Image (cartoon, rainbow, N blue to C red; front, top):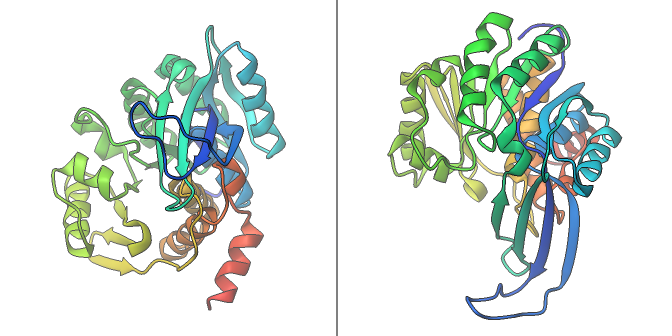
Length: 312
């Protein structure tokens, strides 16, 4: 990584409309929920907030619409200290995620409407990345924008000296172009995403290691396969390491993966070793599941520090 110490996040910006209920309704059934929230969300925006709260100067590159939700999204990012100079406004609605959280299990299901996120172009992203190249050390991406944007960033990263960390979620509906993997420095899929992309059924640490090798064989530098409450598997060129999860009481798993990726990216952008960056990512994810909501659950660097001290 370069010495700039900042993070650029290329990705989705949504407003999350979340209902908390147990049990969730079955088809045709109406139930009374426990609580409702409307907050900033989207995997891109979540990771930008997570990186900023982890202590890294962060730039968001994405798109919002020209509706009332756009102001909520811009304000939420700016108030967290995220640079929003790379956030474009396009005609039409801002991205929306309709989320249901089962308050008994803390599991969730999501209906995602990309809206403005689908109109973010490779040209716009390239212009924004070139403008901030001297201020950032790493780029974070997800799969809630177009494949065209991902291809452009994967190709551009080596030219600009900006390593790409790809969180390949949500699981892609179609195979990703093979050429992108050579432009990815680190990928961090969960077990479902890894299974979908590689065709290897990820059930445990051994199969996670096999899936990680699939990514390395295609040019990725490092793979981190997350396994939820079973921890994560770090796959490097010469070593595979199983990492146990931190034990906490989960109330909402929404954005746990984004907390992990943002904290990981922030640590790497600041020159931290990979093992420490992964440890901080796992701690951030553990803290995130103890708080309801996506953006409200993303922990600060101080909270992660204290969490790790308590478990030293």
